Image (cartoon, rainbow, N blue to C red; front, side):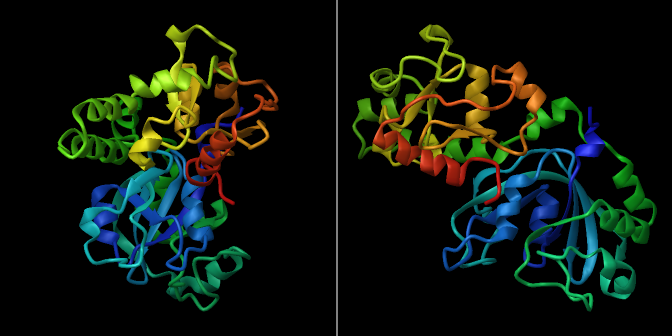
Length: 331
Protein backbone atom coordinates (compact mmCIF):
# COMPACT_ATOMS: atom_id res chain seq x y z
CA UNK A 1 0.00 0.00 0.00
CA UNK A 2 1.28 3.48 -0.85
CA UNK A 3 2.28 5.74 2.02
CA UNK A 4 1.01 9.32 2.30
CA UNK A 5 4.42 10.52 1.09
CA UNK A 6 4.22 8.29 -2.00
CA UNK A 7 0.82 9.75 -2.92
CA UNK A 8 1.98 13.34 -2.64
CA UNK A 9 2.02 15.53 -5.69
CA UNK A 10 4.08 18.65 -6.20
CA UNK A 11 2.83 22.01 -7.41
CA UNK A 12 4.23 25.39 -8.45
CA UNK A 13 1.96 28.38 -7.92
CA UNK A 14 2.55 31.86 -9.33
CA UNK A 15 1.30 34.40 -6.78
CA UNK A 16 2.63 37.75 -7.92
CA UNK A 17 -0.71 39.54 -7.44
CA UNK A 18 -1.95 37.74 -4.35
CA UNK A 19 1.10 36.36 -2.52
CA UNK A 20 0.49 38.19 0.75
CA UNK A 21 -3.21 37.33 0.83
CA UNK A 22 -2.84 33.64 -0.05
CA UNK A 23 0.31 32.84 1.92
CA UNK A 24 -0.81 34.98 4.87
CA UNK A 25 -4.31 33.50 4.79
CA UNK A 26 -3.18 29.93 4.27
CA UNK A 27 -4.84 29.02 0.97
CA UNK A 28 -4.74 28.86 -2.81
CA UNK A 29 -7.56 30.48 -4.80
CA UNK A 30 -8.18 30.60 -8.52
CA UNK A 31 -11.11 31.48 -10.76
CA UNK A 32 -12.74 28.61 -12.61
CA UNK A 33 -12.27 30.01 -16.08
CA UNK A 34 -10.27 32.57 -18.04
CA UNK A 35 -11.70 36.03 -18.59
CA UNK A 36 -13.04 34.88 -21.98
CA UNK A 37 -14.93 31.99 -20.37
CA UNK A 38 -12.53 29.30 -21.60
CA UNK A 39 -11.16 26.63 -19.31
CA UNK A 40 -7.57 26.86 -18.20
CA UNK A 41 -5.46 23.83 -17.37
CA UNK A 42 -3.79 25.90 -14.65
CA UNK A 43 -7.13 26.59 -12.94
CA UNK A 44 -8.38 23.04 -13.49
CA UNK A 45 -5.29 21.80 -11.65
CA UNK A 46 -6.86 23.16 -8.47
CA UNK A 47 -9.31 20.26 -8.63
CA UNK A 48 -6.43 17.80 -8.31
CA UNK A 49 -4.76 19.24 -5.20
CA UNK A 50 -5.06 17.02 -2.13
CA UNK A 51 -3.93 16.89 1.50
CA UNK A 52 -0.21 16.29 1.85
CA UNK A 53 0.70 17.80 -1.53
CA UNK A 54 3.69 20.16 -1.54
CA UNK A 55 3.22 23.67 -2.99
CA UNK A 56 6.08 25.96 -4.05
CA UNK A 57 5.09 29.63 -4.12
CA UNK A 58 6.76 31.77 -6.80
CA UNK A 59 6.59 35.55 -6.35
CA UNK A 60 8.74 38.39 -7.70
CA UNK A 61 10.98 35.91 -9.58
CA UNK A 62 11.75 33.87 -6.45
CA UNK A 63 10.54 30.82 -4.57
CA UNK A 64 9.29 32.70 -1.51
CA UNK A 65 7.33 30.07 0.44
CA UNK A 66 6.68 26.35 0.56
CA UNK A 67 3.41 24.89 1.81
CA UNK A 68 1.60 21.65 2.51
CA UNK A 69 -2.01 21.33 1.32
CA UNK A 70 -4.43 20.41 4.12
CA UNK A 71 -7.62 20.12 2.07
CA UNK A 72 -8.96 19.24 -1.31
CA UNK A 73 -10.21 22.09 -3.47
CA UNK A 74 -13.75 23.36 -2.94
CA UNK A 75 -15.93 26.09 -4.40
CA UNK A 76 -15.43 29.47 -2.77
CA UNK A 77 -16.08 33.13 -3.61
CA UNK A 78 -13.19 35.37 -4.60
CA UNK A 79 -11.54 36.45 -1.32
CA UNK A 80 -12.50 39.98 -0.31
CA UNK A 81 -8.90 40.70 0.65
CA UNK A 82 -7.87 40.43 -3.02
CA UNK A 83 -9.36 43.89 -3.49
CA UNK A 84 -8.74 45.17 -7.03
CA UNK A 85 -6.54 42.21 -8.00
CA UNK A 86 -7.92 40.14 -10.85
CA UNK A 87 -10.76 42.45 -11.96
CA UNK A 88 -11.74 39.97 -14.69
CA UNK A 89 -11.79 36.92 -12.43
CA UNK A 90 -15.15 35.28 -11.84
CA UNK A 91 -16.88 35.70 -8.47
CA UNK A 92 -16.82 31.98 -7.66
CA UNK A 93 -13.63 29.95 -7.92
CA UNK A 94 -11.63 27.08 -6.42
CA UNK A 95 -9.99 27.26 -3.00
CA UNK A 96 -7.65 24.82 -1.24
CA UNK A 97 -6.29 25.31 2.28
CA UNK A 98 -2.50 25.26 2.55
CA UNK A 99 -0.11 25.61 5.49
CA UNK A 100 2.62 27.89 4.11
CA UNK A 101 6.09 28.50 5.50
CA UNK A 102 7.74 31.73 4.33
CA UNK A 103 11.35 31.14 3.36
CA UNK A 104 14.38 32.96 4.68
CA UNK A 105 16.44 31.61 1.77
CA UNK A 106 14.44 32.83 -1.24
CA UNK A 107 15.77 31.15 -4.38
CA UNK A 108 15.69 32.73 -7.84
CA UNK A 109 15.13 29.82 -10.29
CA UNK A 110 16.51 31.81 -13.22
CA UNK A 111 19.92 31.76 -11.51
CA UNK A 112 19.84 27.94 -11.59
CA UNK A 113 18.07 27.34 -14.88
CA UNK A 114 20.87 25.16 -16.29
CA UNK A 115 20.15 22.68 -13.48
CA UNK A 116 16.37 23.04 -13.65
CA UNK A 117 15.87 23.13 -17.43
CA UNK A 118 16.13 19.35 -17.97
CA UNK A 119 13.47 18.85 -15.29
CA UNK A 120 10.90 21.29 -16.66
CA UNK A 121 7.59 19.66 -17.68
CA UNK A 122 7.27 19.07 -21.40
CA UNK A 123 3.77 20.59 -21.25
CA UNK A 124 2.28 23.20 -18.92
CA UNK A 125 5.65 24.27 -17.57
CA UNK A 126 5.66 27.08 -14.97
CA UNK A 127 8.94 28.44 -16.41
CA UNK A 128 10.31 29.26 -19.82
CA UNK A 129 13.53 27.57 -20.88
CA UNK A 130 15.46 30.79 -20.09
CA UNK A 131 14.16 30.71 -16.49
CA UNK A 132 11.63 33.50 -16.82
CA UNK A 133 8.15 32.91 -15.42
CA UNK A 134 4.99 32.54 -17.50
CA UNK A 135 2.33 35.10 -16.68
CA UNK A 136 -0.58 32.92 -17.80
CA UNK A 137 0.37 30.13 -15.39
CA UNK A 138 -1.31 29.94 -11.99
CA UNK A 139 -0.89 26.38 -10.75
CA UNK A 140 1.33 23.85 -12.53
CA UNK A 141 2.31 20.34 -11.52
CA UNK A 142 6.02 19.61 -11.24
CA UNK A 143 7.81 16.29 -10.87
CA UNK A 144 9.19 14.98 -7.60
CA UNK A 145 12.68 15.27 -9.08
CA UNK A 146 12.11 18.96 -9.87
CA UNK A 147 10.69 19.50 -6.38
CA UNK A 148 13.68 17.82 -4.75
CA UNK A 149 16.18 19.91 -6.70
CA UNK A 150 14.31 23.09 -5.72
CA UNK A 151 14.33 21.97 -2.10
CA UNK A 152 18.07 21.42 -2.30
CA UNK A 153 18.57 24.92 -3.70
CA UNK A 154 16.48 26.37 -0.87
CA UNK A 155 18.52 24.46 1.68
CA UNK A 156 17.49 23.22 5.12
CA UNK A 157 14.03 24.83 4.99
CA UNK A 158 13.21 23.15 1.71
CA UNK A 159 14.50 19.72 2.63
CA UNK A 160 12.61 19.83 5.92
CA UNK A 161 9.32 20.53 4.15
CA UNK A 162 9.84 17.66 1.70
CA UNK A 163 10.71 15.24 4.49
CA UNK A 164 7.39 15.87 6.21
CA UNK A 165 4.62 13.40 5.38
CA UNK A 166 1.97 15.51 7.14
CA UNK A 167 1.99 18.99 8.64
CA UNK A 168 -1.31 18.93 10.48
CA UNK A 169 -2.97 16.41 12.76
CA UNK A 170 -6.46 15.06 12.13
CA UNK A 171 -7.98 17.68 14.44
CA UNK A 172 -6.36 20.46 12.38
CA UNK A 173 -7.64 19.01 9.11
CA UNK A 174 -11.15 18.81 10.51
CA UNK A 175 -10.98 22.45 11.57
CA UNK A 176 -9.50 23.77 8.34
CA UNK A 177 -11.28 21.67 5.75
CA UNK A 178 -13.78 23.76 3.75
CA UNK A 179 -13.71 26.63 6.23
CA UNK A 180 -14.29 29.14 3.41
CA UNK A 181 -17.20 27.10 2.07
CA UNK A 182 -18.99 27.03 5.42
CA UNK A 183 -18.51 30.78 5.80
CA UNK A 184 -19.95 31.33 2.32
CA UNK A 185 -23.04 29.20 2.99
CA UNK A 186 -23.55 30.84 6.40
CA UNK A 187 -23.49 34.23 4.67
CA UNK A 188 -26.09 33.14 2.09
CA UNK A 189 -28.30 31.69 4.83
CA UNK A 190 -28.13 34.93 6.83
CA UNK A 191 -29.04 36.94 3.74
CA UNK A 192 -32.08 34.74 3.11
CA UNK A 193 -33.17 34.82 6.76
CA UNK A 194 -33.09 38.62 6.82
CA UNK A 195 -34.68 39.25 3.39
CA UNK A 196 -38.12 40.73 4.07
CA UNK A 197 -39.01 40.45 0.38
CA UNK A 198 -39.25 36.68 0.78
CA UNK A 199 -42.39 35.42 2.59
CA UNK A 200 -41.65 34.06 6.05
CA UNK A 201 -42.67 30.46 5.26
CA UNK A 202 -40.48 30.43 2.15
CA UNK A 203 -37.50 31.86 4.06
CA UNK A 204 -37.79 29.05 6.60
CA UNK A 205 -38.11 26.46 3.83
CA UNK A 206 -35.01 27.78 2.05
CA UNK A 207 -32.93 27.70 5.23
CA UNK A 208 -34.07 24.14 6.03
CA UNK A 209 -33.28 23.10 2.46
CA UNK A 210 -29.59 23.75 3.11
CA UNK A 211 -29.66 20.72 5.41
CA UNK A 212 -31.93 18.67 3.14
CA UNK A 213 -35.01 19.18 5.30
CA UNK A 214 -38.52 20.65 5.14
CA UNK A 215 -40.22 21.42 1.85
CA UNK A 216 -37.16 20.40 -0.14
CA UNK A 217 -37.10 16.92 1.38
CA UNK A 218 -40.82 16.43 0.78
CA UNK A 219 -40.37 17.41 -2.86
CA UNK A 220 -37.35 15.11 -3.16
CA UNK A 221 -39.27 12.12 -1.79
CA UNK A 222 -41.64 12.41 -4.74
CA UNK A 223 -38.69 11.76 -7.05
CA UNK A 224 -36.28 9.48 -5.15
CA UNK A 225 -37.04 6.52 -2.90
CA UNK A 226 -33.66 5.04 -1.91
CA UNK A 227 -29.92 5.53 -2.00
CA UNK A 228 -28.97 4.66 -5.55
CA UNK A 229 -25.62 3.21 -4.51
CA UNK A 230 -26.26 1.34 -1.23
CA UNK A 231 -29.98 0.66 -1.95
CA UNK A 232 -30.89 1.66 1.62
CA UNK A 233 -34.57 2.71 1.55
CA UNK A 234 -35.22 3.46 5.23
CA UNK A 235 -35.74 7.22 5.23
CA UNK A 236 -34.29 7.54 8.73
CA UNK A 237 -30.88 6.71 7.29
CA UNK A 238 -31.07 8.86 4.16
CA UNK A 239 -29.83 12.41 3.56
CA UNK A 240 -31.51 14.75 1.10
CA UNK A 241 -28.51 15.83 -0.98
CA UNK A 242 -28.68 18.67 -3.50
CA UNK A 243 -27.17 17.82 -6.89
CA UNK A 244 -26.45 21.43 -7.75
CA UNK A 245 -25.16 22.61 -4.37
CA UNK A 246 -27.48 24.74 -2.24
CA UNK A 247 -24.91 27.56 -2.27
CA UNK A 248 -24.96 27.75 -6.10
CA UNK A 249 -28.74 27.64 -6.50
CA UNK A 250 -31.41 30.18 -7.17
CA UNK A 251 -34.16 29.98 -4.56
CA UNK A 252 -36.47 27.89 -6.75
CA UNK A 253 -33.65 25.40 -7.37
CA UNK A 254 -33.06 25.08 -3.63
CA UNK A 255 -36.57 23.68 -3.21
CA UNK A 256 -36.70 21.65 -6.43
CA UNK A 257 -37.08 17.95 -5.64
CA UNK A 258 -35.44 17.04 -8.95
CA UNK A 259 -32.32 18.84 -7.77
CA UNK A 260 -31.57 16.05 -5.36
CA UNK A 261 -30.71 12.50 -4.45
CA UNK A 262 -31.39 10.42 -1.35
CA UNK A 263 -28.04 9.15 -0.08
CA UNK A 264 -26.68 7.46 3.00
CA UNK A 265 -24.45 9.84 5.01
CA UNK A 266 -21.14 8.41 3.79
CA UNK A 267 -22.24 8.51 0.13
CA UNK A 268 -23.61 12.04 0.65
CA UNK A 269 -20.17 13.08 1.89
CA UNK A 270 -18.48 11.64 -1.21
CA UNK A 271 -20.99 13.29 -3.55
CA UNK A 272 -21.00 16.65 -1.77
CA UNK A 273 -17.19 16.81 -1.72
CA UNK A 274 -16.83 15.89 -5.39
CA UNK A 275 -15.20 12.49 -4.91
CA UNK A 276 -18.00 10.91 -6.95
CA UNK A 277 -20.62 12.01 -9.46
CA UNK A 278 -22.86 10.41 -12.10
CA UNK A 279 -22.92 10.52 -15.86
CA UNK A 280 -26.20 11.30 -17.61
CA UNK A 281 -26.68 7.59 -18.37
CA UNK A 282 -26.39 6.67 -14.67
CA UNK A 283 -22.78 5.50 -14.64
CA UNK A 284 -20.89 6.20 -11.44
CA UNK A 285 -17.94 8.57 -11.89
CA UNK A 286 -15.06 8.47 -9.41
CA UNK A 287 -12.58 11.29 -8.91
CA UNK A 288 -8.90 10.39 -9.37
CA UNK A 289 -8.32 12.11 -6.01
CA UNK A 290 -10.58 9.64 -4.17
CA UNK A 291 -9.01 6.95 -1.99
CA UNK A 292 -10.28 3.64 -3.38
CA UNK A 293 -9.81 1.70 -0.16
CA UNK A 294 -11.99 4.22 1.66
CA UNK A 295 -14.58 4.12 -1.12
CA UNK A 296 -15.00 0.37 -0.77
CA UNK A 297 -15.32 0.65 3.00
CA UNK A 298 -17.99 3.33 2.52
CA UNK A 299 -20.17 1.13 0.33
CA UNK A 300 -18.98 1.58 -3.25
CA UNK A 301 -18.30 -1.48 -5.44
CA UNK A 302 -14.72 -2.70 -5.42
CA UNK A 303 -14.18 -2.05 -9.13
CA UNK A 304 -15.99 1.33 -9.10
CA UNK A 305 -18.22 0.14 -11.96
CA UNK A 306 -21.85 0.84 -11.27
CA UNK A 307 -24.89 2.12 -13.09
CA UNK A 308 -27.52 3.58 -10.76
CA UNK A 309 -30.35 3.81 -13.26
CA UNK A 310 -32.24 6.50 -15.10
CA UNK A 311 -32.41 10.14 -14.09
CA UNK A 312 -35.12 12.59 -15.08
CA UNK A 313 -34.28 15.17 -17.73
CA UNK A 314 -34.16 17.86 -15.03
CA UNK A 315 -31.87 15.79 -12.81
CA UNK A 316 -29.54 15.34 -15.80
CA UNK A 317 -29.18 19.12 -16.13
CA UNK A 318 -28.30 19.44 -12.46
CA UNK A 319 -25.85 16.54 -12.75
CA UNK A 320 -24.13 18.32 -15.62
CA UNK A 321 -23.47 21.20 -13.23
CA UNK A 322 -22.17 18.81 -10.57
CA UNK A 323 -19.74 17.12 -12.98
CA UNK A 324 -18.58 20.45 -14.32
CA UNK A 325 -18.32 22.44 -11.09
CA UNK A 326 -17.99 20.03 -8.16
CA UNK A 327 -16.35 16.76 -9.23
CA UNK A 328 -12.64 16.79 -8.34
CA UNK A 329 -11.05 16.06 -11.67
CA UNK A 330 -9.39 18.03 -14.43
CA UNK A 331 -10.82 17.95 -17.92
